[in-house]
Image: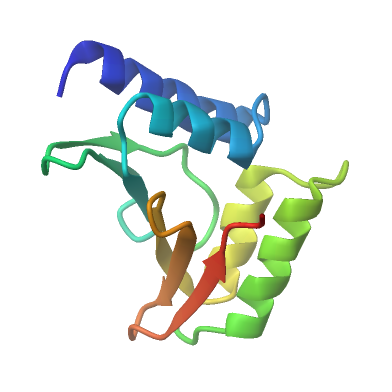
Length: 133
């Protein structure tokens, strides 16, 4: 992976955590850089950004409290996604991460071509969210 793409991925990760860019803006920047998606792993506290040719880069995420709860609550995860989409004054990505883990989310996979996010629990339960139109 070239240094420019790594810098873009790092910048997008930082922007999500410090709240300086929205999810749609970050997705647009990553697509423009040639990424086809990324994965968030709350158990390892990392994000892995994927290129279509199989190349990728794994970056550490800022830590957030707690681990993924043993039971996955898809309804709570869906409610958290609605909270994030509303982007109200009380929203933060750090808060989203903490609450998602408390809802049993062990991580999620974002597919740009598929326009969806697959959230998963520790025992492989899933919840799929499609990108808003």
